[in-house]
Length: 362
Image 1: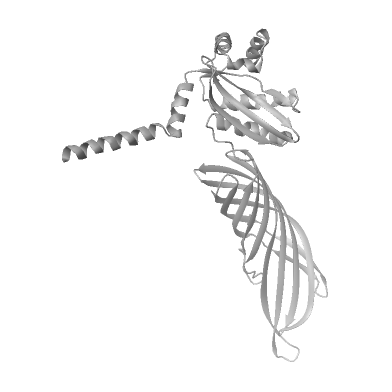
Image 2: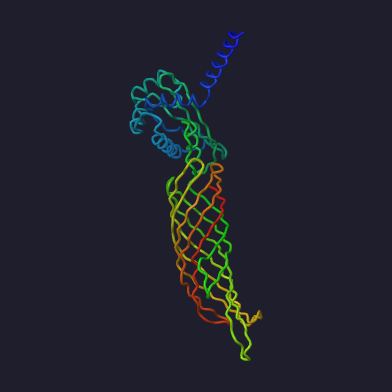
């Protein structure tokens, strides 16, 4: 009985090992290990249908750039050399199905593999098709295909995605992004002349990644806070009274930020700083013993600086959630009020901003 169980166990283990060895991930690792010892030549894409040769050549350059930077192969044959040899052999795309032809071409180039394909356009729809061809057998070891529109931007994207699929590369994330933020604004300074409560913050951000580790952002938003201060007084008849100053402050920040990014799997940690201008509006009501006796408003603009930090959690290639904190330096803003309450005063809007965010990359 024990002997039968042991035999079954061995069969099960063997099946598991065979299943693992046949998985795409394991096959990809075997391919990559083999590629590391070989040279590859990039053959320009063939233009078909309504696609011109210049467009096909542009996409060929993009494919070559990705292959070189990937480091998947021992080396990439110089494109100039490849084109000279192809011209000498009066190359035709159909010739790559002939083992004798590809073997002779491979020996002249010193390459074990070719990457080539075609881009075709018919009635507004385009296709970018790539093949990884082994020189000795003229067999297509891998293929990749992407559909696209006629727009150059979309064709470039299709060529990048097809190349990444062909070589099991992770496509680079989009560089542009837009973020919507909302949260809390809390002025720091509280004294006898200024007692502002925490208010709300709303911001829209456009960002561009200069690299995976550096990004530049422009933002515009809205900050809101209000507060009240009171002063005791004595009326002409000797009775006590109280002056109350209620104010509502609205701030429109226009800022630029440069930030450093640390990607950690699905999370991005970042810190940065920047500056810009804050457009400020202050509306004041003056009350005597709870009765409004005057009002006024003032507007100003002031340069401001900030430091910030936070994290983003990637929900996919294009969508992310985040939280961040910002400390704003905005001191001694002079306001001159107009209306039946007139006068000058300085306010300090230095404080903290804490936001939650939703962003999309494109």
